[in-house]
Length: 221
Ligand code: IPE
Ligand code: MG
Image (cartoon, rainbow, N blue to C red; front, top):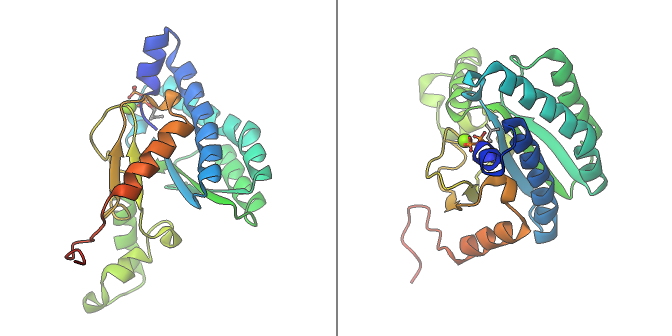
């Protein structure tokens, strides 16, 4: 969900306002995803690298997550949205960790759409953590294969990502879902995230639907 800062600059408002506009775009996008029949949506909200931002911006993002949990996600839960968090928990302040866990528990039975919020998430950190778990579990080297590692990622049930959308005109992955997106179709849009809407999501899904996926094999003739 990229481009909040540039959106804020373009509108002459604070970066915090840009992030708030981004949170509104998230709400809109989740509702659009429900309308399209999408079952699983992962959004990148805060990366392992974002801690390097100015401390007041980091604090604002923590408060914004808390406000989103209080104000937006209960409404989405009424529409059947199960929310889960993907990433490290140990660096997030305990009061916020508790809110995150409470929301996961409260929405655990819902199944219209599964919303994963990647927060203090990094693809490399996730793979390193999985490698550590392989060692902790005492696997023999010959038993280390893709299934064994994938089973130790943060959310093994996430499996493969089909479509990865990057907003704001940047053409990079930025450490998002490195393992899970190995064969994802990539779609880039110049829209800044706060301007992203249902039409943009639909357009990306249409581009995806027209792609031919071969997963490294020959296409059937
Ligand atoms: C939001 O956009 C992404 C977050 C880290 C919350 P940015 O804050 O990266 O916006 P730009 O890239 O400065 O425009
Ligand atoms: Mg950015």
